[in-house]
Length: 194
Image (cartoon, rainbow, N blue to C red):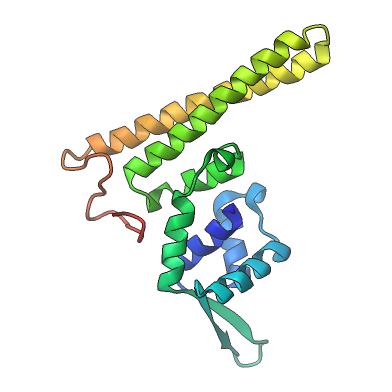
């Protein structure tokens, strides 16, 4: 789902052709979020069928034709629904979580906190699960190494989530007129900020 979210987010800032969408995502988020043509173009076709985007064919002189994709009002609504839809199953996916954090500027602070809290809850459950594995497999030193490594990763991410929560609070505190759930009028606002 995060692929579709990233595609729509790219089109929020204006019309783009497929290669430009791919390039912008990779430049912003790195190799871990590379979107290949087998993901990009089927998603664009689905969005066209849904009415979320429209397509214009442009033929620059001396160059092959290009398909330029534009976000529709329906597409903005779909983007807002998708970014806010973060059930436990998606919260368990690090990629889904990371993409939403990268798009926090598109969300109000209440939603930012909700996403952080859901991911924190999932990680705490995982940590408890690893405690049980640790007890059951204490005789196998290599299983224990894997478990210790995974627990350290979880602890590191939990620390990062606490940092993110504090950062969201600090942003709200830096402007006394801003409360959780409200954006300053001069901030870039997407259609998802109420």
